[in-house]
Length: 416
Image: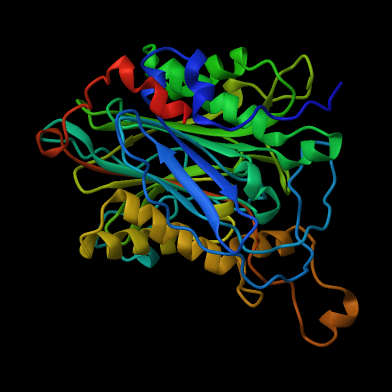
């Protein structure tokens, strides 16, 4: 049967995970029946983190694309306001949100201070030449924001992400929404995949492709997900990235997009994806993930996101936003919130020419002929779940020390 739903999304679902994994913070998002949405984060030994949420905005019925697995088709959806939630910077965190479509075209930018127009085009699979760090690097701060699609707000959306600051490991997974047409909750697979990915890192995996492979082998439920995992080697100053599908990562250096991953799609709106081959024989594999070694330095910022981010915000605008936040003294969490806010604002703007609609036009999609006769064209943001993860890099000695293990007596806090 392909009709099983997702398990309940609650902090106590971590009880079966290894002790180290159980210290993770779990961001829970639920839409209240009133005009506000609820979002809380549980961290062992810490009080719930105050949420920053908005109420539903003006509804508008537009035709958008439902991202699909191979053989699945687009369908119209109603696009409305989505509630945002933030996750506090912690040693380990796992969160959920998103579904959508992507059209981000990967390329690499130049060094800080170099105008993007003067940077010669190059192969995005060949990251920039190394800047050898003079000192070991670490993660100064990290943060995550998740904005579920309004139709999925009660369960928190269909994306998942993990943040393991002490290990320098981060991941974003995006459950493929086309499974909903089969009676399957797309969140079940992506949530479990994120948990297994984080567990693999905590058990010693340091290669992001191996992390993806380990999770793929251990998730035995119906569904599929895209996956992007980044792990920093602080001693060498190398950020190892593996990406499969249309989530992605970028390095912001100054106002420039120093590096960004390309999107992998079988066809427009049909990303590479991982699923249990017993239920989904067409699944791609971990070996299909593209891998990158990016030399980073103090002051660089890692930004990861689901396609809900990249479909609505160009990489250059993300880099400019990061630079403005850093200049304003904001930390990684506040920067993630700023990026997610811009993504949401673009997603509900009917006149905005988003990266998604640009790619849609390039693939033959447009308004009806009578609208084209009036000079109209396909534009507009793409309403979707939005997941954003941000990590600031700095000299290791300037970064916070590893978070201590919490006592078992705090277990009950996660279950409340």
